[in-house]
Image 1: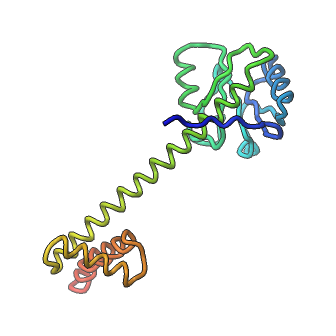
Image 2: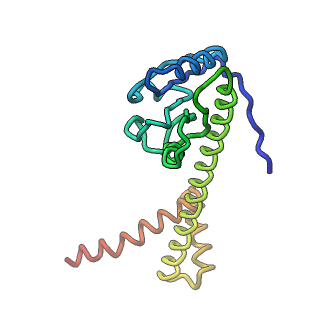
Image 3: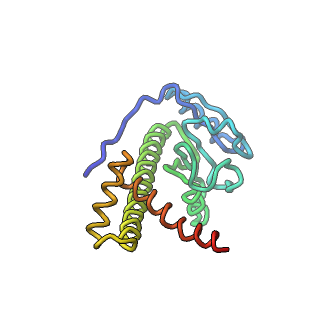
Length: 202
């Protein structure tokens, strides 16, 4: 399935350029201001104010992990790498740092707008994938909890797994909670019971 690309009006967005003072910064800033962005510069590291930015441009040639107030690849906004050197090590670091798009140096009179849109789209796609993976993991955990609850109920007297499953469903209805929440309650109660019994014997 093809994903729709969201072309947006960037006027009023904010961008931080993490780069030492250089003509590249001046050229990029001119482009961004012409597009309608509010621009600030930072060097040698991003301060807490950068957390509120909509975009971050960073120097891939001399950058390092300690410049960012977040873990590598965990930026809360789209990141655009400013690349002058195509040394494999520098490209690898820029990708690991979380670059969603790139802009080659020396920066001229164009390129910033497309870099912004590509970075925004890549960032949105990455976030959507992260949410999807998190949801799949949560659902898998819930299924495993249901299986464990059914196994525990079966071990405590249910005729078979089908009967234990039906018992769990009745519990969920009686407690007025979801099937998965009921399973979590059963697991918590039945795994805590043996420990409490051992404590009483001790």
